[in-house]
Length: 473
Image (cartoon, rainbow, N blue to C red; front, side):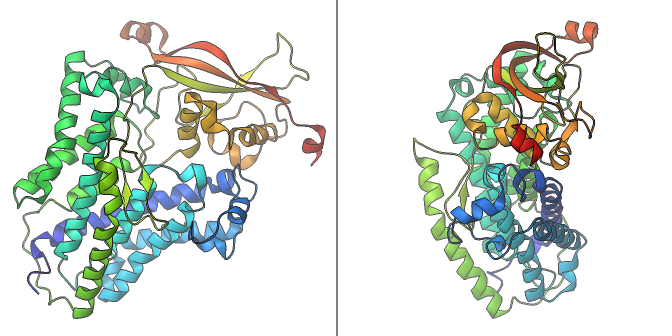
């Protein structure tokens, strides 16, 4: 069975598996801490209502058999526990089949969450985690060397992530072709990080170099993953460095870290492989059958990738086994933010005091410096960025969000950095206003201490209150 395994990649597999387990842990922790306000029984987009409209075949999930907030919490915290066990190496303590089943558990649990998560779970890295997580089931443990075909499928995912993103950029915004997109991107990206202000103020010639290097990394380097070592190791290393640069410049949840984990699987570490027995026949048959299935399912992502009408971040099957990826085909030139405020006055007057709600990650107070949250995913903050682009992105949930602010809903307020109202005195009215944000200059930063400057644009939501029926209910 020498043709079936790649013993020299045993340490690559180990590093990848532990990194993937850590990412699973963050994903389940994010779900456990945020779900009640987002998709819980009293959430903005409740799961029970969604399940009444969507059949199991379209969105396979454990919650089709039973849903309650307590059961969802059990699923999410169980996912945390299993992920922690995998991070500690529990799969290596089990027989091969037991390790595979253990890796299957977080995939099945997270699939159940994503398939009822609706808008809050519509990000590309959800499908990416499921696709990579499913493949990890068939990587084996200490009882067998890594299967070559599974490693190549991992690198195939990495290829599609990088090459797909490169193509959508070249086909999309002309600023990618002119090498000028990073004149704007660090300022207008969804979730700036603590260093984003400094990245934005790098010299423009360096921004051109950044974009050119990005094109090389995404359009040329991925092909080298399939060249024998040491070229493939060098290619993966270039991708890791590029992803770390993105980690420093913004908050993209676990997208960059998962890409790094996949790239680590292609790095051949200089370590002597341990002696392992030949792979059992049943394992060979299962792996080859799964590989054949995934290759067949890759048809749609490949067609999409080479199409002039390429779409990004789409799943082609309800199990998220094979998906298409790509981001920032176009880059915003101007940053808008929705600022949400409340007042205790009834009715509000011209001179009413409007107090601003502060979010954890999205820009608000111009003097509040962004923090690093990734790989943790602030779902509400990300959706607020989309809401600022167009009210159409917020139509399904923004009204429910405002309603819960008017109720001082405890779970919703936990998603925020600070509420300006005490727990026993909710606002009588809430409004939303649209502002244009820009990074301050070096001089403005020294004089004001503010990293942002903002200008009022227009009303986003007029002052809104609960009806007496809703308030009493």
